[in-house]
Length: 452
Ligand code: NDP
Picture 1 (cartoon, rainbow, N blue to C red):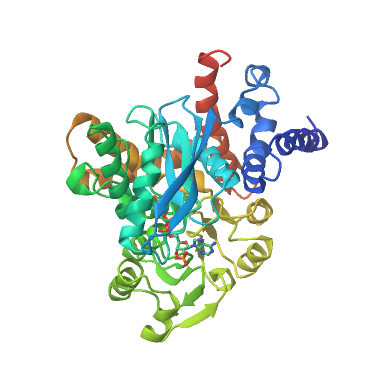
Picture 2 (tube, protein in one colour):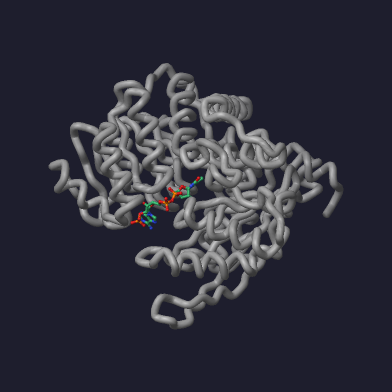
């Protein structure tokens, strides 16, 4: 098939996706990224084409949406919308996080659930895909308001989930506190103690290393990718966006492995510390963000660093960019700047942080690009291990889990390479490798079930 035919078949496919899912830009973007690799790959594979596997995968098994009412601290009634998207249980029970953020809508959750399908397949664990959440904004809410919201959310959500059916976890705005409130409510309503959520507290069935796993895993993946291309993380400068769960753990692990991390951010702007963060500075940021609800701008005064209001860190001259905040935070202009500054690798800690045009620019320029579905799969992999521990009614030691995480990230890296293409200069296209490896596993399972 010629390049023209490939472009035409992608255009036709996306026309169909857009017509069926009007206005869902984030979902279109995620599907287009996968289809641009999968459509050419299946062109000579009639078994996948005839069974219309890709077309079936873009229709979630089901989407539920529900009203979530709760009382605020003034005694006023508040109303939010809750969702659960159950995309595919072809290779295991539905699995994927819950996001509480005002930007949550069906498009965002469908893109996240679609991405999750390939990510979960790449882990090698039996995990299907889903995603959920609410347009509830936890910022500025008291603990009691958060509790009432979480209890109301779970009162409805508990009808659709279960330890062998659908196992949500955290995501933006949902951490250990929210998981605790929701687990408590599930237990109360169902009268059972099962591993229905992951990211639980250690006292009640949680796994050591779950909160660290996404950030640590992304750095392990970066290490594999750099070593594969004869580089070392040790001594490189790294810019990280975000200052939440993924960003702070990625920073911590990168520093431990000898990298110089010079930036963090939040939705207000980014900081640049030319001397790099160390353990003392990281402990200060951790307290600021996780205990005091502060803004990253406060770091600049405390440690005499620069603060760029309203900016992301992609204008900084660094070797590695790790977007760990949210979707679409690197556009093509950012990509051009990073390429001009001779950035050698982009490692996605967040989901879909890079626009499709920017990804193509990185790949064309020979920048190593680690897509989220591979690089940030450590979190869901550790959730899979939490499910195993819950099922066996035991808990594994942190050092055992750390080894598991490192080996799973190495295996994900190998799965990408197995299906990846390479440029003449030997640069591996990890986007292609991740898309094909993830798709093949789910698609082969779907073929076994017949048309359903
Ligand atoms: P957190 O809620 O802990 O942190 C999110 C961070 O991103 C905060 O610093 C927040 O800043 C910033 N942020 C959020 N929205 C925006 C925005 N629109 N513009 C700029 N900054 C923003 O979330 P996580 O760290 O858990 O998640 C971050 C990313 O990683 C998400 O894409 C998530 O889907 C992905 N991910 C998370 C996993 C996990 O295990 N937690 C697993 C796999 C992927 P502020 O506080 O100002 O809002």
